[in-house]
Image (cartoon, rainbow, N blue to C red):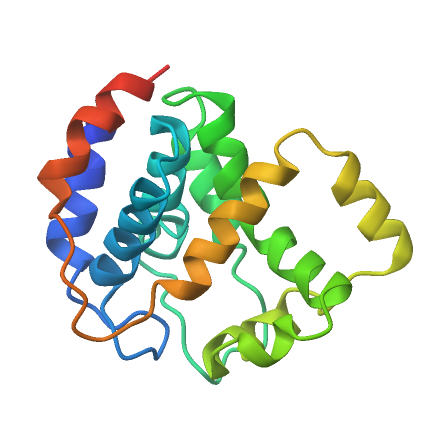
Amino acid sequence: MMDIIARIVDIFERRGAESYLGEQVTMSQHMLQAASLAESECADDELVVGALLHDVGHYADEFSEYSPSDTLDKRHDLVGARLLEGHFSGRVVDGVRLHVLAKRYLCTVEADYLAKLSAASVHTLGLQGGPMSPDEVADFEARVGAHDALRIRRWDEAAKKVGVLTPDLAHFIPAIRRVRA
């Protein structure tokens, strides 16, 4: 079985140039932008790595590419969390697992958040259950890791800018090594 760091590098090398869910950036550009935003806010290594890997579940399954015509959620948050479990700290895994719920939460509690979403994010929001019910809001707020997931989600949405220069994946490998379980 491939070491988790080698697997992450492999995913970036093989799939990184693919379109990121119909956005104007590639998968690797998006994930590197998210990690760079976390780093620019002096986030700790676990949050930087969580931001870097938040969407790894889209590309961990060779047969599960996103299409704008999708009618079912492919649960990339859970796929990514399962890939990372046992290899990384709970904060990293929870950040990946909860970032979709964080989007649903923000669309519920912040009146203007939905308007900030890209067209692809609006489409996937519908597949992911849409804004939360009051019970779901309370459940999310009570979860360990909810605050971290909200930070990752904000970096996620901001990480879709064309032409942004970021460090490459090699820059983040030391942080990945530091937070391995």
